[in-house]
Image (tube, rainbow, N blue to C red; front, side, top):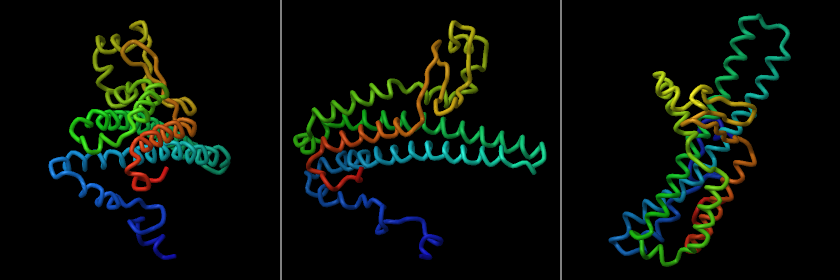
Length: 228
């Protein structure tokens, strides 16, 4: 069992996806489509990566819950240590929220790129179940209706750098909340409205189902894309 200590999981180990499994299919395509098709195949596998990244954000929140309970139950720590530990836990929660926001944004733009690449990969496009792809896109827009969370997370300082910017993002030009975690909800105000992103297992499963629908749109790749 020493591999668990010495090596990061690599191709050939259980649970590790090997993108090389797509090479035979890629090499069977017309030469002038290989470049764009290769990028599309890579982006298809990236969707699964984003699901895993979102799952990691959820797992981090669960880990912080455990750490928070340990801090609260520890009656031996000094006040300064208690304060620092509580503060660190809060910062880790915020990290999870920001990363989840970024992940949803990257997922959305990756899937949009796949959809818009169809004219450049006619051989692949001919075998795609377009209805499945449309259903996946609609489900993503329904369950994750906007990508403003990424903008709020990525421009926290910029959005309130001046009174004018503050007012432009504040609700009714008066009420502004920095992006923050509230339980399992990432809350923020942006462009004059309040928004939220749920960072929990139901949201993870929704993102996973969207990915499953996308993969179902490519029957020619059945068994070759990351298992869902």
